[in-house]
Each structure stands twice: as structure tokens, then as C-alpha cells.
Length: 219
Image 1 (tube, rainbow, N blue to C red):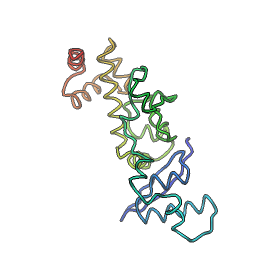
Image 2: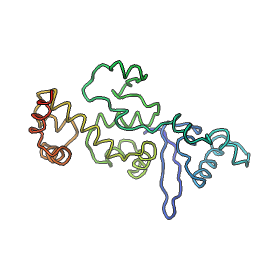
Image 3: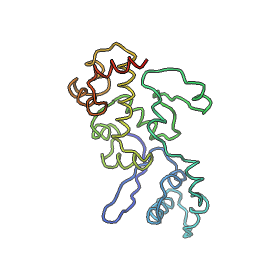
Image 4: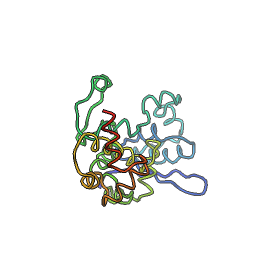
């Protein structure tokens, strides 16, 4: 089970759990602080972790959280699936990618600098198209908490991340390999070829075989 911090930010009538894997208190405040209500929750957590006794709420605001939101977003930009999953089939980085300082981590994805997202993206690459409950079980957390964390840190749902990765895998495997559709189905995490064919018809408006011909004609 991954080490994590559990924070709760109340929203009107319900409570959303946000899990921040591998983040320091400073990073948590910088990345997730969005409302005064959430701020107070984070402040209590900060006191718990640091044993500070100050009652000055401005301490964190002035010394940890940037007043200028643009600077905060520049320092901690939103990480999207396309920033992480650069390819399905391993390849060398382009000169442009190297110039951007992109580093491929041990999972085969672009490094995000965040332990949780790196681990989650690595799991996506390993498991592929699976139910969200499967990911939550592997990570040892409730499904709702996992979904809330992904959306909070990236602005995208867990399903959006899976969808983006499977689309990349579909395009590359169909266009660049001669693997059977049944093999591709299993490799991308689908239980059978029928499920994968249904996915392709929904996402690409074509069967896997038709999509393969279309992609190869574009070469």
C-alpha cells in the first residue's frame, strides 16, 4: 500500500476525500489550497504534522501558498494524460522532447515529479482498461477517494486517463504491429475481443480491423 495523506475538504452537504500520495505538507498546500474552508482544514493538518502552535493562519498563506495564482500554476502546472503518456510502444525521445527536459521514468512514462501520479500512470500502463475499483483495490484506497484525487491533481477523471492511454495503445498497436485483434484486446486490458471492438466503435466509429486499415493508409 502506498503511503498517503488523507485530507477532507467539505463542500456544502458532502465531504470529498483527497489523497495526496508522496506530497510534502508544503506541496499539499500549494497544489490543493483553493478555498478558505479547505485552507482551515489544511492548516489543522499542518499543525498536526509540524507540531507548530502558532494561531496565525496567515503564516501558511504568506510563507507557503503563493498569493499570485498565476505563479502557483506556473510552479505546479496541471498535469494532463498527454503530458505523461508520450507513447505506447517504447521509442527514443524527439529532440523537441529532450529540449523540454522530459525524462522517462521506470514505468515508461514522462516523469511528473509527483510520486502519486507517477505510480498511478505506471499502474495504468500495466493494467490498461480496467474498472476503477480494480485500481482502487491495487492502491488500497476507496474508489471515490482515488477518483477525487485524480480529478483534483489533473482536472481529468480517472476514466479520462484510462481512455487516453488506451487510445494511444490502439493507434500504435494497430498501425505499427501485426498483432491479432484478440491479442491487442488482452494487452490493453479488455476481457475479450468483443469488449474491445465495442470500445473502438464508440471511440473511433470503426471496428478494430477497419481502424487498422485507416491508420495504415495515412502512413
